[in-house]
Length: 333
Image (cartoon, rainbow, N blue to C red; front, top):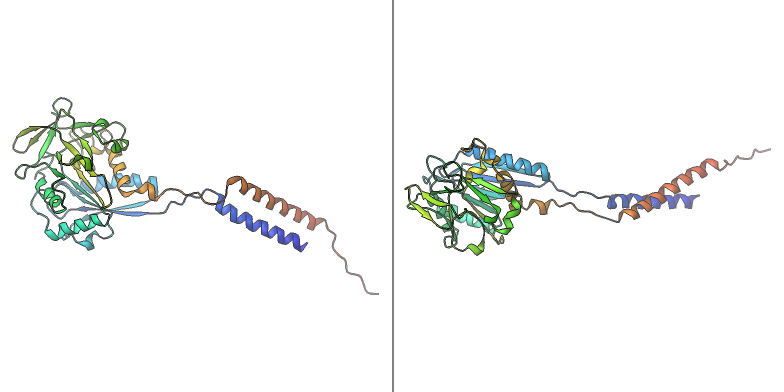
């Protein structure tokens, strides 16, 4: 009887071990990310609307992937390694040109990229805000990051531009439609059909190094001095290699806000705008790779075999205990 009990115990232990290691367990870890909006250098955008818009996007990602994304506004005015430590994405919004970045601040951003950080530098159409966005400040950052020979925001004497498309655009041509055929192939799965945006233009001098989104071929640039130029314009650029961190140039920062467009609909609800920004953040933060479920242990059929053996042995042992007569001690005479 003792042997049977021993066998039963061993089988039950094996059963317990294999149940734990066989059942598909989702090993999604509760990851925490931080996005910081730099509001310390003369904004040309409503920072509250920007923060709210980004929080609306990150809330969707949090629910879908069981993660936490904090969105903070930085107003201290001194960007250094301490301020950048623990940050995943540092977002520079459209600036009005009143405050340029100090050399030590640009060096800190360069260190941030080298450590694998994500830097989003965003501009906006010249007509979007007053005071108007001044891309010269943003290009000064790019110059300090040693990217001036590769990509920059359009500016003429410190004045930015607005892209128009009088043929296919909306609202007098200042709202343009960006379809998937205007994007690098790697970006096309970010959306279903198209972006509907108002944007400034980006000049990409070495296109092979960047994933890009181009303006329609019918678009033209109109700067603040009403000077018109034609050519190939881009509205988005992201470096292909991420070994030194990711840098993103965005010409349509309005889409990140919860502000209402001239069409009477919030920018995020136009076209695939929300889907695009959501997928961009997921890609930049590598959320999918870090929350991939894992299946551990033995195969499912073997688990059933152990379960059945343990259950059968347990039942048989109980029956035997009930049926076996008890020993009655002999009375002494």
